[in-house]
Length: 104
Image: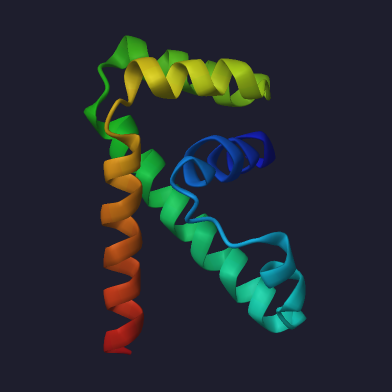
């Protein structure tokens, strides 16, 4: 899970320069940082579930194997090959979570 989170933060979010700077993250209180991490994990979990559900059984097994391998490069290659809409899913799921938070 940690390898995948690092992959998301460095390879995907930084491509669009939407990832907050480290200075911003360091300025958060522990409670704010914890909440941000929990929201991030919720979004990633939803994206992975969505991706998993669209894969066929063979690709699902590959996905499980790749994520258990804890290899960032292998994870990156898998996402590029088997989940081409990953960024789209990420943006959609983040928007859904944001809307759910606003409704609370």
